[in-house]
Structure formats: structure tokens, C-alpha cells
Length: 330
Image (cartoon, rainbow, N blue to C red):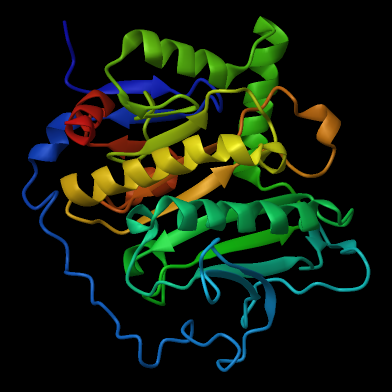
């Protein structure tokens, strides 16, 4: 008997999710979202960063540019503050606490109206060069453990400003989701003497149904265990655990595929809000994580987690990843 729904277990984390495409038949499941409001340049705090009180860290220009194209600035309202000493860990009764020391910076492209998928290749690669330069600065700080790099696009994804921008948050602990992923990767390597993500890439290439696009150096596919409808992951084909170690000439393959994937999502899904983020091995204890494989995850904001998902940690995905890839690939 073929069931309409399936529970699938993630190869890395061991987490379960439910694939329930029949729920896609519910009324208004994918009703058109509210139209994104385009904010004018006038009054945008990212048009004149110095004038709006942002502390500028680095400035990047394209080869033939006459002014800045990308800047790294300190967030005016950071979740974490950097101090002169490492964060101190203490206890309060049964609870553990560590001081909120770290960094929260923003990477700001000059163009107010073009999101990542719409940028020319040089501008898109310049953003990743800024990511990597700042990442390497964080990696030199022995007080830090992990660097999160992400974009929130649209209000449903947590973006409060229209002008496209990206954030980098460096923290003194390894986040639980990352720890979960690292542990699963390590277990697979201990058992199979191989990278779990490389195994996934090999299978997806052999299977073919969930691949969205690939080029010489990178591959994009809808994961077999998708937590959200139309989730995508982009992997460099070369095995490399650490984002900061990626060579500049190899970044172009990942960056180009990220642009292509976001462009397809914009067209096929009517420009949804989304989050994308980079998953990489931590900057602390680097010798321990060579089994990992850095990558990018894209999560469009289409469905809403409710009681079952929040109460169990098991996501219900209402679009089969095979079908999602077919739509995005077409």
C-alpha cells in the first residue's frame, strides 16, 4: 500500500519530518502573499551609511567603479557587544549563563533596488569576498566559536529594512542546530569513512529528480528531507569544511548558483520572502571538523509552523521535494 504521507529521517541530524503533499489541497495554502512594499531611497539608512551613524569597517569597489559598491558596517543595535576579554561563563542555581560578547555586523551593497539574484556577477562575488574577509577577522579571535552569515529578505523573514543587506554574527558558543549537524556528520564519517554531504550529493546526482541546477563547481537541489516547501541547498562540489578556506576562484560557482536558485524561486514562487544562511564548521577547534562540508541553505517563507511542529520539533512539509525541484527546474 502506498501512503499519501511519509515520515523521513534526515541523514545528518537524525531528525524526522513529515512529507504530506495532500495538505497542499487545503484552501488558501499557497494564496498570493501581500505585495512587498518597495521603500524609497529617500530616508533609507543604508544610502549614506556614515551620515546615518553607522561605523564603517571595510569598503569594497568593483574594478571600474568610481565609488563604493559594498561596505561592512557595525550594526547600530547589536544583539551582542564585543569586550576586551572573553565572555565569562557562570551559573545561577541550576542554570548556565555566558556573557553576550561577540560581533554583529552588516554587509551592505550599494544598490537599493536589486536583491542578490539581480546583481551582476562581480557585485555578487564582491559580497562573498566581504563575507570571507570579515569571517577571517572573527576566526582570529580566540574568544569566538561560531560565525553565522545570513540574509533576511522581506518582513516575513525578519527584515525590517527594504534595502537588501546581509548580517554576520560572531558568538562565543556553537549553536545547537550546528552542533546537531556536526555530530551527525561525525557519526556518519566514523561509520563510513566518508563525508555525509558528499554521499548526499552523489546520490542526488545519481537519482536526478531533486536537482535544480548544477555547474562545474557547485550543485543545488531540494533536500530529500525538506523542512519547508521549496527548501534548497547549495553545495560546492569540492569537499571543504570551512567557509573561510574556500578559494576565491571557486566561490564563483557557488555564488552563481545561489543567484540562479534565488532567481528561479522569485519567478516560480512569485517572489516570496526568504532566509538564506551559510552552514560551516566552527572557527573553534578547527582540527576536529574536517568531516564537515560547508553549504548554503535557502528557506522561502511559505508555510507557518503551528502546534504540532512547535510541540514536537517535527516539521510538516506540504510539497514533495521531487515536485518542488521539478517546478523550480522547469
